[in-house]
Image 1 (spheres, rainbow, N blue to C red):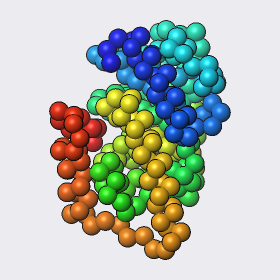
Image 2 (image 1 turned 180 degrees about the vertical axis):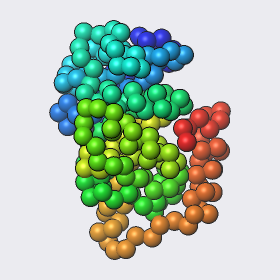
Image 3 (image 1 turned 90 degrees about the vertical axis):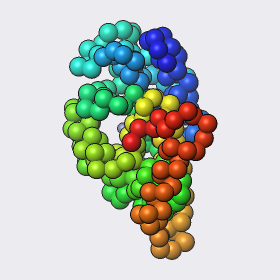
Length: 225
Ligand SMILES: [Zn+2]
């Protein structure tokens, strides 16, 4: 994705992915993307229904939160997204949802243990829990950055709130949100059958390395770590 208009269009499709994968209800959830080689971020407008989202309705802000283009106010989570972009240069996209299974873990304040090869592949270990923080200021962003600094996971469960995911692109961040919900559901089902057995560290390392560097058809591992 290069120009702002391309990013606006891409974000419409990615918000549709949130809905298609049943990660969001009503107007909750949002995706943003950094415009390449700029200090600009494109993000969902606040309070519009998913049916109303168009490329034109997306809001362009600078890293300080000033609206550069757009007819609507930006998402109420904008300060959180911008804090993460300012702190982590490698992040090109961020997604946020209250997807039910992952948010159940967040409500319980418990990390999702790494008990599946798919988790080792995508998350390189457990999906961690970040601190509780009130919505609006930079506290959530600080909690996300501090928690992800200790983990390879591109997803963090913010306590009593929901899921934030990062990626080299907005598409990667949305993929991480989809995978997070998928494993949150499976691991919850597994626990209903009895005790969970986390994978050995050596196995997690081997799986993560293979998936990030060898698997698939992309030219090289481009995932955010
Ligand atoms: Zn939220």
